[in-house]
Structure formats: structure tokens, C-alpha cells
Length: 466
Ligand SMILES: *Cc1c(COP(=O)(O)O)cnc(C)c1O
Image (cartoon, rainbow, N blue to C red):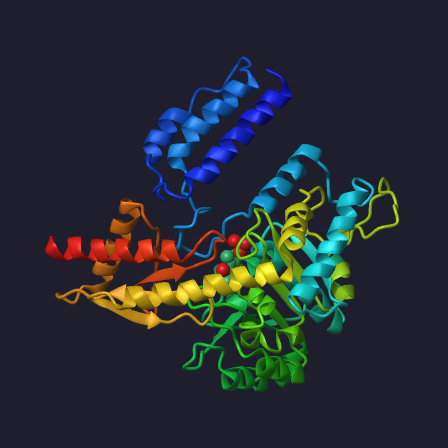
């Protein structure tokens, strides 16, 4: 079979799959055992025709897919992938460019330059900030915090790049109680360890309490210039954004570095309706966000931005005698990876095809639908509203007559996942089991929200009558 028949086969599957997402049940239909039974075979010793491999992959994997890309998925904070982004992402594979070096692919190098500039403009971050297109928010944290680690230690007369961390001056890291675990892991990867994090109290609005930040910094004023403060642009459970205006002023008065986790929440900046929630976020020193969540590009796409471009460069740049100066920005001087996928392609395609207005519409539609979905579920019998969305995240739980609310809440979500008409995930929040409601996918519309509410209502009825 020729390559073009193989590609046509995949294109045909792509079309069928995209169509099926509208109506198919969200959950996988196969158990892990069943998937292993069909996929796990003895190491192949002889060749198999590529079309047979692809056919087998489709039929053997599909029962084990969670259909997060469709319009009925309200779990975690996971977007879908816009057709323009998917198609451009195919080009990344078709062209197989190594976007790590400008000379390796001048076109991809220039795309990175364009994406960096567009993203800063969209997110309203300083035009002078440096950037890197990384695998996701996890590595964006690593990138931003590596720059912070470099600068804070450099101020103390320590070159972490050559001297490492053994014997280095002490640093401090302050964060609210609500940071994402990827932030903690970034500190682990950077050799700072999670034990360094001092957790600060939140205020009643669930934002980092400015008095707690001021008190923590004032307790060791001489350490101010060696302190990293992590703020939240979209708390993972509630979507709450910290008060950047006030908190950046306090942090900077002590000389601290402010790092922002804006995995999804930073995208609120694109919408005139929600931008006020993020006022002052441009005053931070580094920002981490995702492309594969609210921008709805395929996975393997996040962005790091650093106000102190020199610190960013000093912490990442490397040199090798075989590199060629091709006259462009060298991605690998700003990225933690060396060879890398051309993830500028899907980013560019979404921004060019939707424009600022189209991206703002996704942010606004998701947020409006999250508010409705949360309110309508909260109005069902036995439901208890814990957080009404300010952005695209809501929290509810389900009360049980016998007081076992945690079990009831877990049972409702499990029954919904088995039902398949809508998918929700639970988490533990303030000691309670809660259902997280997230709307992040470009395909979700009012009709899907209506269907989800109906499914929750029916599941509640069934559970109550049991
Ligand atoms: C998803 C998420 C992350 C991690 O992002 P990845 O792209 O999965 O690495 C970090 N912080 C928050 C708030 C998130 O929602």
C-alpha cells in the first residue's frame, strides 16, 4: 500500500472520529485488562504492513479512549483540539521538522518568533518578555522557575549554572495553599525541593491573602530578593485569580520574583468580559500557561514567558560547535529541550484562524456555560453549591440523607461516567469530596449542557430510588 493510501485511511478515520464525538458515550468501553489482552502481544519479530498496523491500532485502541475532545467532557481542565490546530499538527508530523534549531528549520524558527509575539499581545504581557514554546504548563513552570533560580542566586553572588546548588545560598518560595502539583514538581526538578514551599493562607474569596504575603516577607526582609512568590491565574478547582495588582506590589517591594501559574486562567485576558479578573498580572516576572487546554490545540503545547529575558537566556542557553548561525532566534536557547516538535504550527493555526475575537468567544462561551451548568446542577434535589464559577470552573457536591455526602458525591460521578452522556471528575476540596465542573472545549454548546444536566438529574433519581 502506498503512503497516500495510508494517509487517506487515517484522514477517513479522523473524519469518522470527529463526527462520532458529537453523539458517542464519553467513557472508554474496555477495561484495562481487555486493552492489555488485545494490545499486549509478544515482541514482533517480523514486519507487518503499515496499513495493517494502523487498522489494528484504531480497532484495538478505540475502546480504551476517553473522549475528552468531544463536547460532553466536563472533567479536569482539558480542552479539545480545533480542526485548524489538528490539521496544522499533522503538518508537524508530515514535515518532521526539528524546531529546536533555527538552521534546522528556518520556517519553524520564524513561526516560533511569530507565536511568541502574538501570544504576548493576546495575553497582554510585556512585549519585551522572552518566551519558549514548551510541552505544557509543567515545563513552562520549570522554564520560568529556572530563570528565577538563576537570577535570585546571581544576586547573591552565586552562578547556579556552573556552581550548581550544593552549597548555594538559601532561597525562599511562597505560595498559596492552592498551587498545582506541577509547580511543586518543577521545584523538585530544579533541585529546590518541595520542602522549600511556605504555604500562605487564602482570603475568604479564595485568593492569596495580601496580609499573609506581607507578613511572610516581613518576617525575613533580608531574604526578599531571594524569594519566589507563586500566584494563581485560575486556581485548579475554582478558577479563582489572585489579586495581582496588590500582590505584585507587595512582592516587588521586598525584591521578590513573582511567578504566575496561568495554565488555563491566563486566557481570561483575551476576553474584554473577563480580563478584569487578571488585572495587574503583567506585573509578574514569569508566566506559565498551556496551549492544549483553553486554546484547544492538541497535546504537547505550553508556553513560558519571562520578563527578565537575560535571566531566561542565561538559565537555558547552550552552545555546540556544530550549530549554525542562521540569523534567527534559536529556540533551543530558550527551551529546556534540544530537538523538539514544531508546536508553533498548531498555535499559529488557531490564532490565525480564530483571531483574538474567536479565541475570546471560546473563553466567554465556556465561562457562561460553566456558570449555567453549575447553577442548574446545583438546583437539583440534594445538590449543594460550593463554588459558582467566576471563570470556567465550578464545584458542587451531593448531600445524602444519612450524612454520607462524600460517598454520595463519588457515587453520582461514577454513575455519570458509566452512563456516558457527560463526564465529570471528583476531587477532595477543603476536606470534602466534590464534583469539579469544567468547561474548556471549543465544541461545547448550550445543548450539551442541557443534556449533561438531564443526565445528572436522572442519575440522582436512580440513586435515590435504589
Ligand atoms: C493543567 C494545569 C497545570 C499543568 O499543566 P500541564 O500542561 O498538564 O503540564 C498546572 N497548573 C494548573 C492550574 C493546571 O490546571
